[in-house]
Length: 229
Image 1 (cartoon, one colour):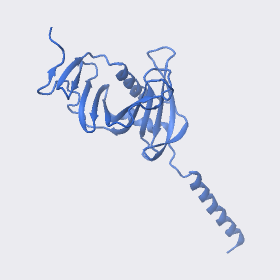
Image 2 (image 1 turned 60 degrees about the horizontal axis):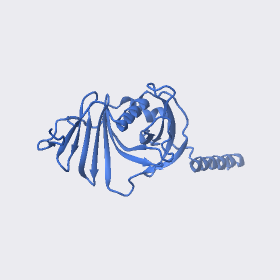
Image 3 (image 1 turned 45 degrees about the horizontal axis):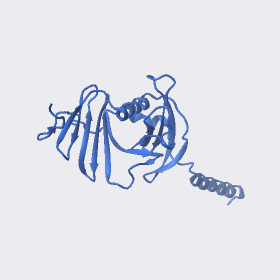
Image 4 (image 1 turned 90 degrees about the horizontal axis):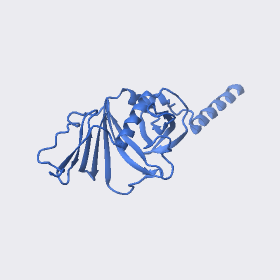
């Protein structure tokens, strides 16, 4: 073999090895790809975890909070212990909602105005759907066994002057879909900071079936928890 060809072959092999070792061949992730589901999806479900000092506040127990969102802004929150339903909050967009207690088989009507937590979730979805900026990942973290690029976003609140929400979103390097989102319940706060009330959304499922999920009619056999006067 010609010496020059041999040297070029060795150099090429070394370059390939370094590329693999350093991750040059890893799929590129654009923030726009990760935000696309929030812009286009008509519904999604995910698990919701309350955070304290940036860490799960309920670590170690068997409680699961399942959130379901449907366009343009309906929310449903199911609390399960193991796989057994404990309670459900149903908030159809712009309509009165209902809280169901499956243990006591009771229901409590609610007004149409979302609470603090629900309002923050709706702002999250709306903010990510409208976000048009682009940036490089702030880091790479392992999420459910996957090394996912993390983007740290600051999105202005159009309803509050000089106020912005801080979000952290992790995107799967291959599917290009979000695998985790974290945000504080108040604008201007870092979701991983100490003594900050924050929420983590993960295990997303997109375009889920929502038929009857936002029906506020109490199930048969459930009684009102409002005391008659």
